[in-house]
Image (cartoon, rainbow, N blue to C red; front, side, top):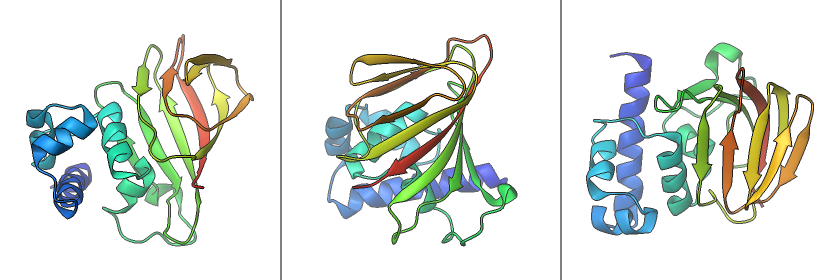
Length: 187
């Protein structure tokens, strides 16, 4: 079994645990997340890997950041996280790559994420991971259109956008990828 397969299976198991902990049926979760029951069932059985948008919806329903959810399927992070040990998650549907540079920990409120969005990729998050979470996005390379609660921000390398949002959309217009650092701070 490969490393990615093992992570996908642990993620599927954790998503099923979160649903059961709340006493929800698949139908109830489907209603809350606005996702089909069959899709959720396939994700919980590790038959498919969730897309970034789907994982975002589930994180919103469960009140967790994506990094925190992914950290729950890994061992507790150490103080020093070497690049080879940083968790990388790929959305096969969009090509989006998300690196958890500083994995979250229960005693800390902030985390640092690196995002790599291929040219033409477009990811919309229609629900926040948690209420009142502060974000600082610093664009390192490429161009990025970041829509925050309906307001479009065109970012160039070096630009930094601070926001607290209910909906976001990440679009890389190209011609090359967009690479950014994102700091997420829980209230």
